[in-house]
Image 1 (spheres, helix red, strand yellow):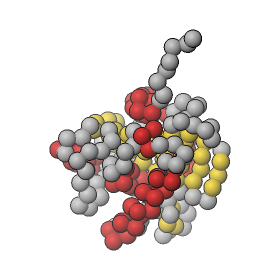
Image 2: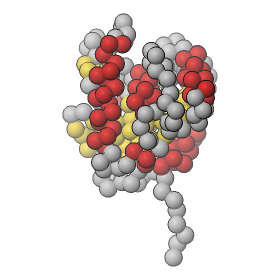
Image 3: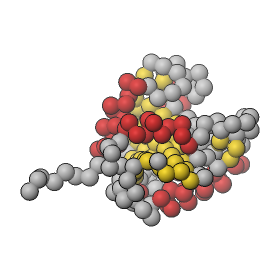
Image 4: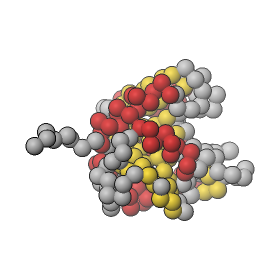
Length: 206
């Protein structure tokens, strides 16, 4: 594992495809790293980004303040994440990159990622940002959400699905019986989505 102040990285340095992870409010870059490793093949680079702001209640990080929600801070958070994704694209093209976010990270993934030429977006237990609509063309999106989520209501992902489909985007919602997390029963579907979007085509042996 390669560690930098603002990110953690697993996998080969010369990878041709990548999974980028955005953690939730109050977590840190390592929060989704084990999951990311489960969802990709060994030849895939996994990069977990660390949110830029310290969490107001001690440990962990945040993309912007949530209690109360500071919508005024969102443009700066959006700009910073976009710049970081474009910097990563210098080594692996965005067209071979899937962006996966959880909770606040999912909201950021959808906000920023839908305006970039990514291979795909996975948004787990996410919610729509105020006034944000999907652009006319955006990457395929896979949403997941627990029906009993006490933190971000299930209806938030239903709203996201409606917004994406209304703008003609490719999107689906995987529901599971559970709370604020990423259901293990969904792992095969998540891996399939990611693999189909970024795995290199397999040539016939010579």
